[in-house]
Image 1 (cartoon, rainbow, N blue to C red):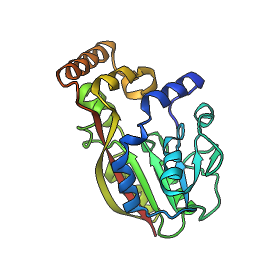
Image 2: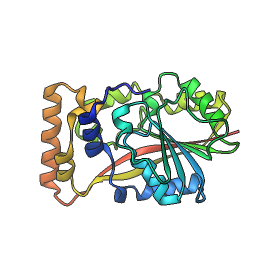
Image 3: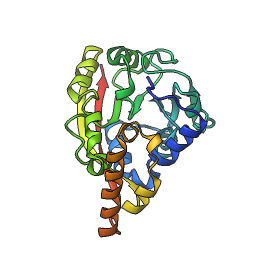
Image 4: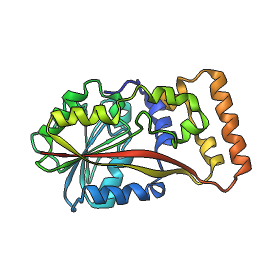
Length: 248
């Protein structure tokens, strides 16, 4: 599932540069509660959990027990396992959980890393209870204009163009027994200001930025610094899609 090899240093950079501060996720907290009303004690399967930002959020927001599944050892090491969070080695196509183990599944910025989307959809159908939602947070082709990276580093849109489309994901999940019930774009505040966002960028921690030629990277940085100087109070707000599908 993961297409990047993480060591301890790159995993730490990922956590520092890519995790959205909890206070910047208000819209996501509200939307998730609307589409997956989770009671305390419910089980959430966090597939491709990364360093655990959303695993801890689901635990803290809703009192859920989170099964965090992550294939990269260096990323797993940073997930705060313990009360409310179980950390397992695994991938979307082969989930290390029994049948009907979870009340909801979360895939945060992971769909484009999945090698076999149809197999992953079948596995999620097996692992979820009837009626359970799959919540997919991702950038999708043709819907990424308000992504911060695309705004200031427009060449990154070419990488997103290769991601699975909403239609492709919906088709794969429909074949496995899921029905699409919602598609929404939601804001997330990555940093209090554009200057703070620029200061926190880690090129090596972001596959889309890492793929840029040096001149495109430097031009994007200049664009971002210029915007920060012109609008010093503007928060760094990006938008991503939430795709919701429900298991039959």
